[in-house]
Length: 215
Image 1 (cartoon, rainbow, N blue to C red):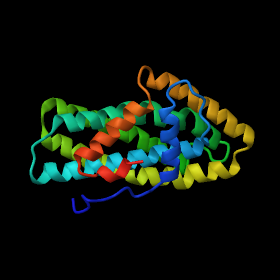
Image 2 (tube, rainbow, N blue to C red):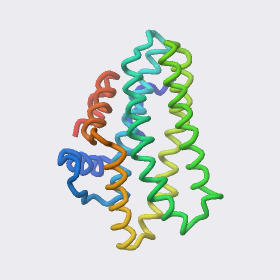
Image 3 (tube, rainbow, N blue to C red):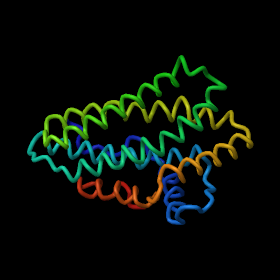
């Protein structure tokens, strides 16, 4: 992988900083961030995790050995935060709103739904590779996850987030904000945003990408 030193392809630093500010306030505190900006802030963190995964995959393919602890934290973040919180905000709240403007059966929404299913399966492939101690399985799943996820983030930002921002009414924004808060409350359970931010930062630190989530 010749792009192992990649930095996040999309930078939503201001959105990430606001997301972090509200994360520090803890669970149960009403969120004020615009829902679309919240998703972009989460994309900023996800992109940093992808960069850490890519750096570690490079290490694994050239030098080894498999570091189960690193990949277990990857699975914790992408399985428990991305799948169970971030994507639920999209699938259960934003996408039904976006269907007003585009049928889900065709176009970007349908492709994004397929991306989510593919990412979910690849997360399980990572889990199986880690459980088996099979570095080749882990490397293969990581490569495929990176390939799917990078295009997926850009597709969401371009074809869903920005058009939705332009078309939403103030009532839509308020309803989305309420739904996001409820999804986060249920999905995170005893954990909170700061837990997953610390996981993401630990991955970046271990991959030698300390600067990516410094704010």
